[in-house]
Amino acid sequence: MKTVLFITPTWVNIHEDIIRALVDMGYDVVCLPEYGFPSDPYKVRGKHPVSIDEAEARKTAYWKGNLGKIDKSFDYLLTIDGAGINSYLFEELKRRNSNIYCVNYLYDTTYSMYHFEHNFHFYDHVFTFDRQDAEKHKIDLLPIYWVDVKDNAEISREKIFGFGAYSPARMRLYSQIANLATNHGISHFIKLYHKKINSLLWYGFYLCLRKILHMPQLMSIREYKSGLISTELIPTSIYRQKIKASEIVLDTKVQVQDGLTARCMWALGLGKKIITTNPSIKEYDFFSNEQVLVVEDKLFNDQEKNIIVDFINTPFKMPANISATLKQYRIDNWLKTLLQINE
Image (cartoon, rainbow, N blue to C red; front, side, top):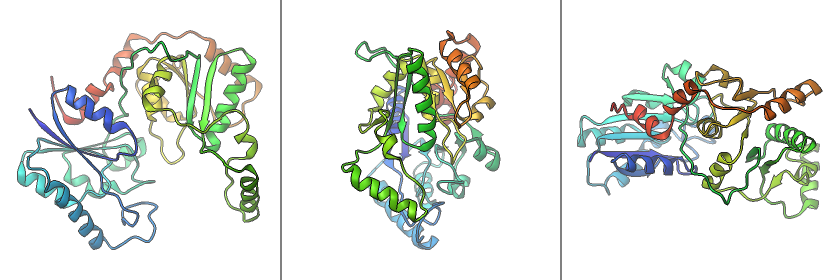
């Protein structure tokens, strides 16, 4: 049985999918969290960075401590992002197995999050979900994976599903689509997450103070009370089942990147139609005007509203060629691409 050292951020759930898929594929997996600290000089938006020498000493101590507890060699090193990785890690892994295959997958960017590129030369292969990074660093573009989801009779079925953390852009899109759906009698579950505000009075005072100080504005009280806000998150498993039970999924472009979101890939893989504000989706070989409607991040005029309603009401069946293209991004095939497994 081949072994994989898997280093990943753990604040999102993608590492659980990947571990489960690797085990199902017959691999022995050891998972370690990536090492990140606020003063890392390679952070794009880091505060009060320490010197590179001090950062290297911290990272070496972290990896010595973790690898010292593991008495085995590895056939693969797979890192997601890989903040806080340094030369010691690679030297120690290659000391144990000089033929170890090292691969890096970026689900964050070098230009807005972390200068991952300073470690690229240690890897045998580097992939990214972001088109700008792929072009800038001459690395391979690979969208995030999707996973199969079983039908769940307990999940309510709505035509349109949208859920994400609050942002002005999401509120702009989600509120307009919710209004269109309501006005045309179209079933929908459209919500934005925001932590609970315990005192609207104090929150209103805080908003006024920010306005006086010319600080960026936060969610308004009107938006909070609009009916679109949920103060509870949806677990990942339920989130995917909601996508599975819907016909159309809402998606928005993240301002500091142009890669496709996990939400977008999960919906595409499950054969759902998507309304998105991310125009870069048109550059992918699985793009189809029948499946994806790209809209501008703005208030819609009457003609644009009619186009959206027509898209919502038009039946869709995924063509075989698009389905075959998307199959390569299903998590098992996606991992085979990362690890260069040919079967």
